[in-house]
Image (cartoon, rainbow, N blue to C red):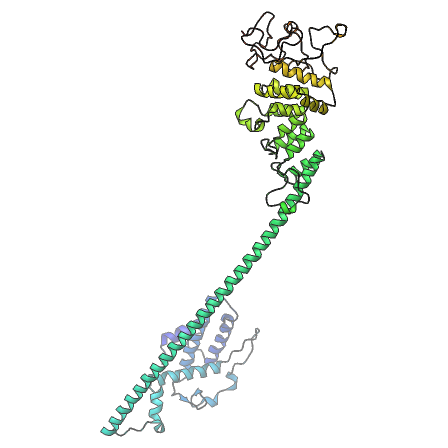
Length: 517
């Protein structure tokens, strides 16, 4: 029985008056349900809630109009009442709305009655497996007769045997499992060792491949570097300054060091005569002062020596290239101890002896004028110049130019205080008068101006007294120059005699005849 308040609320929710017929209820419910059905209002929670309320109201009114009759359950699984077959076809709702939604009221009523029947059965305890077995006498278990003592003992014995067999079976299974696990562990260990060996072999092979590849790459790089270096040295020997600069600047050839780099001996087609000869040595030998300066500005080492122990300065000095010598003197002060490695030589070699090899008076003068020769060096060179063999060798280098030979001899006498060697007597009519000033040789071959080299002849002391103070100072008896730069006056006498072999001709009598102030 439904409460009256619920019936009133259901009529109000469907918009009907109290006591409306079931036909009116169905019509109103159909119209409202079509408008609020969830399939037509997807995502609208309010319409879904309203549809549920309409369904509950319709159920309440349907229960109110239907008399309460006991429900029965047909074998086909449908719950129905006694007059279920007398339904009217007019009440079956199978119309289709405009959206294709079918609404069957009789099916809903039948489903409602079925679930109501199930609910009553559950409440009455007539569900479950125990209830079904209680209702079916064929499914009941027959009760066993009580066992005897012998059967009990037999059952216990059987149970003990089964337990012992089970324990033995479990022990055997455990032993088999342990043996299997041991075999699997051994197998896994061997597989792991095999994988490790394969991995180590793979790494070793890969390392060896990389090593060979790196060695091949290094060899190719060394070959390329040595080829470019040999080409640059060949360009330097051919006096091609442009190619030398291109090799150093673009091909990154190191101007320091010899032609053959360490480890690249196999990539040199023709071995150089001097493996220690650098680009600076070659360029200095060629006399290219601009290229020497350019190499010096691009990491060339001026202290490097060739196989003869000579630096690039010594090579330029030996070949008489004055511009290169001036560049070295201006860039590297010979008086500075940091530059000793550029100028120093091992005895018996000296800068003056190498300058004499150039057979250029100006080169000899540059060494003497900068006090780069000791008294012993000057004496050794004087002995060589005045000897017959040394004179012939020097004249051969000069092309038998006696005038240049005389210039060098006069320079050594002026800076070393030597007297000229004895000369054969000449008839009086062939003698030339002495002049007060030395005449330049070969016209204007040497530069003029203060500090420039001017060839000198051996002039009398009386004539030397009138020379200007800017000329080369005359050394005294102990090998040092007069600090005033003034030659000894007439009448002045030294405290010791000179190292000359005689007084010589004219007024000049060797060094040390005048007094030293």
